[in-house]
Length: 403
Image (cartoon, rainbow, N blue to C red; front, side, top):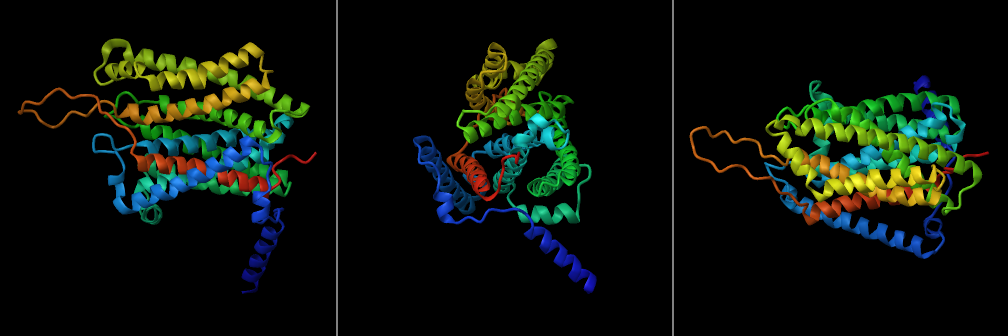
């Protein structure tokens, strides 16, 4: 009993030693009342209100509130979940550049990036909870009856472990225990990369969907996660310093911009060859889907907003136009959303062949899908929750590097 009491006392002392700012409602309302800040505050509250309404509709009507069907079972909430967890993994990679790999120029964003990775994955979990149907039952049977051959089981398990290690790493960063932060940060990074490549495997294992089947997506997810993390890092620092960056921050942002140019170039190379191999040879269920995707405006929105605009600005300015790259990062995040939406929707464009071999059936048409109001409200609510949690975190914790 004494040993248990000592351990309990040690845990309480450790928790109490975490540096947290004492804040109240007045502190949360105490921010610069600029037009932009007031707009963002109002937008966040509107998104949170929409989230409540969307959840109520879902609780009243279940999945009937969504526009998903048997032919198109994955909808907007899946895409938004992927958007958030990709953002989380990307921020984890960016945050690890400083505290895990020891690049001093990037230490300035370590705390902020790791906290952002926690916030975004929590938002992703909240959104997906209203897609699963029975999240509590899922967590119970995830432990009692693990599906070791299921990519989705591994995804949920690994992301749960990843979140745990991110929280521990963040606590040690707050306590300035860099040795422990490096250890847990490295473990968290490896688990996060495993979880994220496994998420790509969820699509790569779809044998019936030849447009996504294969090894492309497990690696593509890691690449686009890093790109997303750099976009968000620029946005975070842009708002933190109001686009007036100190010299040491300029050094960090310049380095990130050069990394981003390389990553986007590799992404363009990957995507180009992906579609060339999809179209070449006219393979049934693959070539026609690829051609249909290439003719859609959402695909070109992804290419222009997330690839061409940021890469052009970085190369034209030689990675030194920090304000322009900030706005290119905003454009990039819109493109990343289209990238996630396209990934989910395009996978399901081609209807699977019905099991009718003796009856006459009409040739199948492309599957059409547009999110319902409930799906849109819950998705926007996830973004509102993400913004609200991040804002509270900036008040609750000291996220800047202590020089």
